[in-house]
Length: 350
Ligand SMILES: Cc1cc2nc3c(=O)[nH]c(=O)nc-3n(C[C@H](O)[C@H](O)[C@H](O)COP(=O)(O)O)c2cc1C
Image 1 (cartoon, helix red, strand yellow):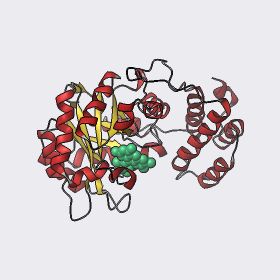
Image 2 (cartoon, protein in one colour):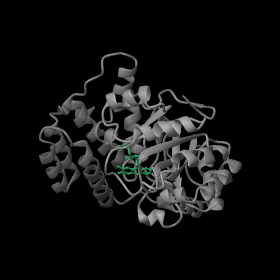
Image 3 (tube, helix red, strand yellow):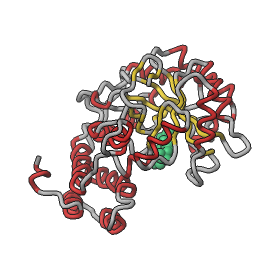
Image 4 (spheres, protein in one colour):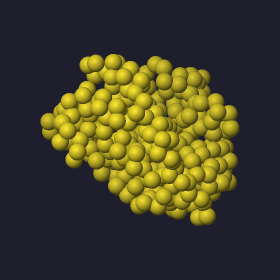
């Protein structure tokens, strides 16, 4: 499938997930195969424009993640256009607008899903950005604000008219948050309503779900969120299934190795340093690497966050989760993972 002139190798993308889809996680997902596009965590347009270090860190990516979409949030058309220009300057392939976040901290500032309540304003944000940048501008929205305001089809048309190259629809309302099921019939209705590609999002937690949605719902692409946190091989498995091949099985050892590799990438992340990153707005300061202990704590917290998803459905998963949450050092964390997943020393050393 294509977004503007950008050709994706696979119609399945890693959904943006704040706190989860950092550059290290995205790199590992890409290495497993089958993932046509990755989207960053949401990034503040204000923070980008002001050159705030933390914000820039969220927007960092490496070449192996390409194509990369940087998702920004905000509600001021001028600031969003400035931020889009910064994103383009960072070399991203796509700039995506968050119109789905229901969290009050975001939504109350005329950003996130509250943009859906004012479609004309939402379209003006898109227009300001498409007028400014050459890279495709895309929009991620929900079905609507609540069950009485399910206006995604109308909004999708308006943002397409304003120049958006694709939209993604999470088939729940903001009021639902994550309750109930994503409405894929409704998502299909949005796909029918517009000429630009529509990605569907919601509840694809197995490769079979991805394949079924691609075949049956009328969307051009699927975003996988929580399913990828549980099983980063879901993209490769969906590609296997789509091409009629045997769906690859993932051994316990491979699962363990994924976590160990994630730890190593996070430990060695050189935040704010130019290391193949194309980031940094002109004139923005770079942050010093975190002191070793602070870095370890950060990594432990990251593994706990991923662990809460990654251990779901595993035999003994809840005990593993409890152990990870009680583990206070990186060495002990590595031991716990090696033991649980029976990872041989040889593999760890490699
Ligand atoms: C932990 C978490 C963080 C999320 N953060 C974002 C975000 O930053 N931007 C966004 O557009 N959607 C965000 N989402 C929504 C997902 O992109 C996706 O639309 C939603 O989870 C439904 O898809 P899924 O069932 O495949 O997870 C987040 C979801 C989760 C679970």
